[in-house]
Length: 357
Image (tube, rainbow, N blue to C red):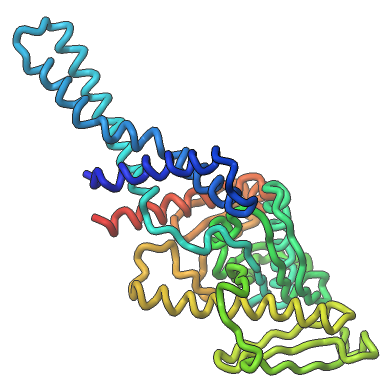
């Protein structure tokens, strides 16, 4: 049974925030933050109230059941109500446990997504482009904003690499499950014998770090400028607009040359660098907290194979939860992506709950 004091604290917090919101004395930013917190508490408040009433309601029903003076119909009805009460109690306890689980402080952050073609040559670059289109559609359906930061195209019309930011509500909490190696099995357009080829692309999802999240000193950065180059080494700009930034303590290097302005390229490069350094520090802390990382779905490691897209069989399989959906086209169009994400989220919650036992 969960500690009553914890459940009471949820109810008191809900009442306190309700009063604050009604007071009209909060500035816009604080009001927005409190509104989000109040909205989250609203999802669990009725379960908390019912959970606290459980013991008294249970005793009342048990008195009726054990009272030999009660008529049979009354006792039968009380038994049914007790069964229903016990069932709802278990559901309420589970919901409250999930609510009380330690939350990832980065879940509400925006994200930077990096997709890179892996093994498979030109076919891998086409798959890289397919993944980007899939995420574009997922974001469009959720009304999230995508901004391309860097893109490197291949001769086949695919992408060697694409880096983009996603802005909206609780972005990282949804997209973080996409980190890892995505594998595709299909017959390439260039294949004359009809043989199925296997290619791969790597996806890295980083929480977008603000300046307040990580302190990057100017003295720790080495900034090099150079002339942007196009395909075949040709110069695409007559000025030194491309930027390469090296974070000396960590060795993280980011190059950016998409913009004609050196200032814009530097700003984009810093955005990526800040996210990469932040993620690196976050990974170290996570590993210190839990060496075996059993309470997470996968490790978030970019080398971990997480999903296979099999075109001949029209299926997509997530290896972390052994879930196969025979709706590959719908998945790539973003239609049923939510179904896979929900499965991953529930599995992670289940693992965390088991770790509390």
